[in-house]
Length: 174
View (cartoon, rainbow, N blue to C red):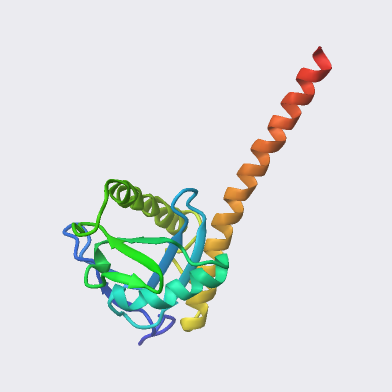
């Protein structure tokens, strides 16, 4: 009896000793390098090699930010994919050729996406999906990433308004 279980769940091999498998869908997540805002998310119905997801994620990023990013920094899962994607250079962790000192710095900063993934899973309910099918998986992913960005924007606005109130208080005291 299958009952209410989702039929589209895939077993994804993680390759890590502490967590060998994860059940769910393959997700591509792209953030900005400096501010960690999410600029692209895509859910894939099949469990495919990470390098094959890069071109479709790249097209989505280009359409979202209306320009081509200069560099793309990816993790070791994309190791088989090297080179250029249109006019954009692709670098992965562990790569030795063509990596300058500044590129190495950005590759170290690539790990800043891991907390974003953790917050999406824990704070924005990406760990459990109650929407059915591949469409439901995509909707859940888009809403979780939008909530993440909205929460970050609210924090920026709150800090700005607190600063305005502080300046107003200082100006009334003098």
